[in-house]
Length: 500
Ligand SMILES: C[S@@+](CC[C@H](N)C(=O)[O-])C[C@H]1O[C@@H](n2cnc3c(N)ncnc32)[C@H](O)[C@@H]1O
Image (tube, rainbow, N blue to C red; front, side):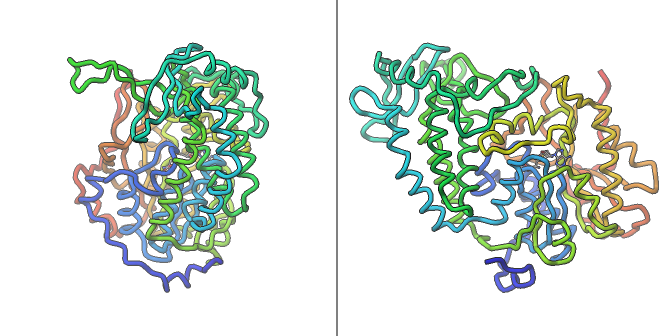
């Protein structure tokens, strides 16, 4: 059952106010915020702080580059109305999940049904000669180095040398063609190690693809309200199911004490297939993510039902609390009336840092969704995408104009941004001198928790992102901004990067 925004007051929970200290020392992602590996997540504390201090209950907050949906969740639990847009199908599925949590009892039952129908068949594909089940295979290219299974104490792995039996089982699936996921379509992009002819068979073993098909088939038989949560658990686990899990070798307690110990790495970003890599039991990867999701939902203190729509108009006319929309934000926001939005809190792609759609292709293929590559705002190294810096700057400049139109006269744009070159900062600097456009008020550097991965895998990677604050021209009311000015390292200057 859906409750309207106003009815939600009945369930109002007392949220503790997010203080400056909390944004300076963020705790890192836990529970639902940690569930999926979608890239570019911003610290929750910072999102909460800006929503609490820049808006009132019932105001409309918009995130037109929504990504994993954390802004949607933080706005909804603070009873702001919310509109989120993303061009990436998997991001939209994930955002919907965060604001429209499945019933935990139904999810538990569906996980049980999937387990009943496929776990046994999947385990058969990892059977060892003595009927134990392999958890990991360590491969060096096409050669098996070792086979791992759980020890009777279950909290550690036993390792053994491979036998002919292990090769024989593996070979049964060598020519396996995936049946349910759609083929991936990628571009030549050395930055993320892809080319046009890359297929799922390059990323996974035949055995993994066979088991993914079994899982997908069982998931698609579950009730519609639960399916998406299970598919997202599968996408979230898919990196660990692939041939992209590297082996961490020689890590001693100190640099001078290397060991022979081999640890299991984790897939983070890009499509690199390391020579020395693990093949991990697909069921184990899936059930870990699905159970994590179930636990996070059961423990979630804000388990509420928001009225979630797919139409922006429903939020504008107060018929829904939240709208999550898949599409190009420039087209979607054409339907947004002038001067209606109190806060735009958003994290656009930062120039060439992360090509989201190319990287999400593995996930979108598993959930059988087609992304719209042509309208993505991004700088991509893939030449035949023609997504260069000049186009990016033009598109972001247009975006800033739309923002100016839809913000209320008292509205604020809080933009998360960073880029390693001056050209990508340029469009922001161009906005400032013109009084008819948004006016830059200042920025502060955003802190990540020590264990957050700031995903940038190139030399000179950026460690900090910034929050840039803009107001509409003519708005002399600076009261909302006072608390920002007291933040450590608040600055009125946009960073300048020397050209190389
Ligand atoms: C930096 S990410 C946002 C990450 C987000 N902060 C999070 O917590 O996950 C930028 C997002 O913009 C989306 N995007 C790129 N071009 C878009 C467009 N034209 N319309 C809507 N979304 C777009 C990408 O799919 C990506 O999810």
